[in-house]
Amino acid sequence: MIRNLSALLALLCHAIVSWASIDLRDDSGRELHLARPAQRIITLSPHATELLYAAGAGTTLIATVEFSDFPPAARRLPRVGGYETIDVERIVALKPDLVIAWGSGNPPALIDQLIALRVPVFISEPRSLDDIASSLLAFGHIAASLPEAEKAAAAFRQRAAALRARYVSRSPVRVFYQVWDEPLMTINDSHLISKVLEMCGGRNVFGRLSSLAPTVDTEAVLAADPDVIMSSEEIGARRDAIEIWRRWSRLKAVRSDSLFLLPRDILVRHSPRILDGAQAVCERLDQVRSRTGAPR
Image (cartoon, helix red, strand yellow):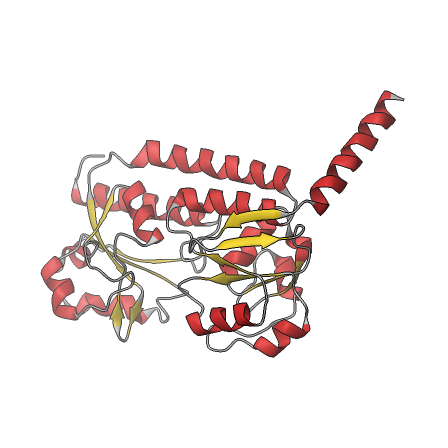
């Protein structure tokens, strides 16, 4: 009897949560009101897709964009476009009760168009590691999967704290992170990847530039003379895009053979997997400390 009563109470609680209205702010500061938890969600970036699955709400996804390939279940979702073009008519036809857009990755005109068409939009733009945990909680709230989201957020924060405690106080290593080669692009300290570098005891040589993803020139990199040059397979494009630095043999990074190309996705997506990327970054910076004789 008690067991049946407990099951009934849990079912009633779930029903109440499933029909409760939701009011919250997205990452741009916009207020969002939903009459009930979202059950038909479209994501417009791979990182939002990963966050939604991690928050226990993958079953609410009805469509996404190209390159949303993790977890494997995401590969089976219908597509509404990619980085270059989003099919607004298809989005409207699918009748979502929420679209999760990417603040710095989707054109502002697209977001404005969706809002004008009365499509509820949540703008996702994690800028710190704790923002990822907060995003998990927000998505769990939005999709009525808060218990799963709370577990995921707690596990993420615990692992991030352990990595920081282990590496942040080690001897500084100066890093040039290459986003793209033509034009030559990097990141500043407001970017999440720069926060990962800092966690690992890295120092972004272009961290003080004003733009989130500034363009620099070869001469600026040579003048900065970083200890490490690092990129990702996803947005380093070609493997030779980072190897080209070997022509400047006087660079510290070249002299210590510290040119690193990280596996695709794990660092560039603002999702829980970024801690896999952080682990890889921390280990590589420790390799450089060993090679150069710097204290750990």
